[in-house]
Amino acid sequence: MFKIYTKTGDKGGTSLIGGVRVPKSHIRIESYGTVDELNSYIGMVSDLAADATISEWLREVQDRLFTVGAVLATNPDKEVKMKLPDLHETDVTWLEQRIDEMNETLPEMRSFILPGGHLGSSTCHVARCVCRRAERICVAMQEQQEVIPPIVIQYLNRLSDMLFTLARYIGHKNNAPEIPWRARV
Image (cartoon, rainbow, N blue to C red; front, side):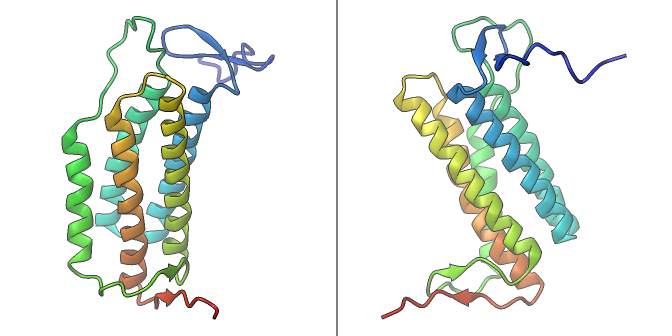
């Protein structure tokens, strides 16, 4: 029987795909841990949206995020024996198509909007923020000369745009009013 615990991380270390051990505080671990957190929030958005089309879209996103996690969890200096999935430009294009599709039904945005109005929409905004954090961590990896395919950063950037649009879309479908931000003067 497969056991969920291995005890190999009890002293604060873990292995990347490829077998290299690193501390659990390593930026690579932080990156794919944040992507995992994002994936969990996206599952919550799917449940709260209670819409078959949105759930289908978000399952596709969750699948791609597992791909992103595998890329981030792989030691770029080691040859990996297993076949790992990868991201494609078409994955970014797919996000752009969903954004355009949702924007066709949304009112024009004339100001910044405050997150809220519907639990699904609010949770989607949380997912968007976690996505931006994942993107920032990946950019920091790049700045630290960690190998990271540029498509990962591009995908996370576009995904955060899609999640922002989806938050508005969920609110719109549920007749939740958008609350414009009014700067105090």
